[in-house]
Image (tube, rainbow, N blue to C red; front, side, top):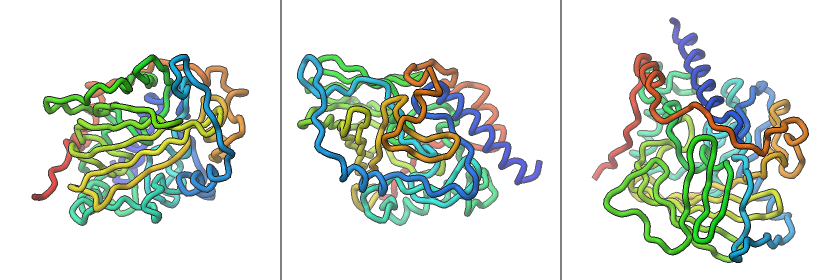
Length: 327
C-alpha cells in the first residue's frame, strides 16, 4: 500500500471509529467539508458574541442551585481535530478558529521540550497532516475508544441530585460531587480524573485532579500529563446555551495556565449544520430534522476493544502512555 493510500485508509478508519463513538449522541457526527469552507468559529467568535448577551438568571433546581439538566451538544465545528487555529487539511478537517481564549494568540504555552514532544507526536500520525515525517508513532487515544474531558468529552446528558451533578453520554458517565467530598487519594489515576465541584453564584466550578495523562485534547497530539490540574466553569447564558470554560495548569509542560472557552448547546437548538459546516449560535438547526436529537443512545465503541487494538498495532502504532517531563 502506498503512503498516500495508507494515510487515507487510516483517516477513514479513524473517522468510522469517531462516528461510531458519537452516533446518536448530542455531538454531531463529523461532517464532510469543502476546501472553500469559511473558517469555523470557536473561542474568538464565541467570546465576542457572548459579550453581547443580556444578563441571564438561570432557573433553579428544588435544592436551589442552577438547573443545568438536559441533553447538551459538544463544541461544534470539527470537534477536537486540532484545538489550535488551523487551515483546511482535508474533507474532515476544515479551517477553524482556536478553542483557546487565553493566551490571546490561541496557542498552547508549551515549554520548549513539551512543544518538541508534541511536534514529534504530530510527525508520526501517518494521516496526511502537514509536517508529518512518514513514520508511525502513536495512534490517537480516542481510536481505542477511551474517553476524556474538554472538547472531546463535553457533550451529553446532565442530571442533578442534591450534592452531585451527573454527566452521561452514549457509553460513560461522570459524577461531579458538590457536597464537599475530598478528591480521590491513594495515587488513583483515571482517564477523566477525579471531579469535585462547588457552586459560585450561577456557575458550577469543577476541579479535576488524578488524571492518568494518557490522552490528548485533540487528534493531533496536544497533550497533558498525570500532574495536570484542570478547572471547569459551567454557566447558563440563556435557556439553551452553557458557556463552558476549562483552564489547564501544569508547570511541568506549560509555561503558564491556559484556557479554552466555547458554548454547549441544548440538543436540537443549535450546533454545526452538517450541510453547510456553519455553526449557529442561537438558531434551531437539528430539531426539525432529527426526531432523536434529544435522546441518548448506547454505542458499541468500548475502551480498548480487542480488534481495534490489534488493527492499530498491526499498522505500526503504539499506545500513547503519557510523557515524563525532564527533571
